[in-house]
Image (cartoon, rainbow, N blue to C red; front, side, top):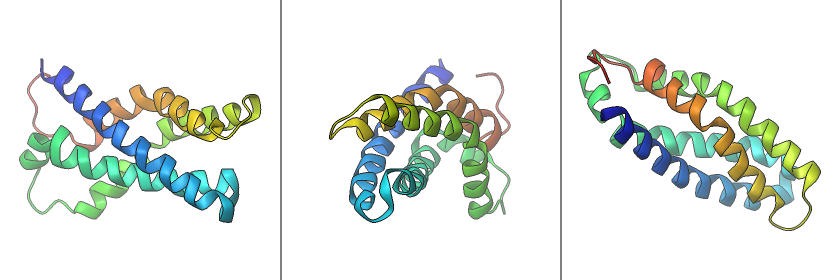
Length: 137
């Protein structure tokens, strides 16, 4: 089933995004703090997942899109539609930092936040950003 393959590929993109997210977070936290660094790390991860999803997960939809479609417009649309998932993601991250202590609390918060936003982000990406002239799914 196409939607199952897309969801699996989207999840793979999420794992890659998680690695980028945590890496950027831990590199920038000493400069920006855990909350400011999280905003930057989320944007880095979202950019990474957009590139992966565009190239692999929804490649057929991208190829089937109208010619002349701006890549930058698609990217900004991706970031905009990811806002619902981002709110769930960041909220879960903040709650985790308040409830869990220790060196890896931030990484746990990123992981739990990513899971919290996964469904909303997948549906947004599939039906709003990378939609094409699909027939069924």
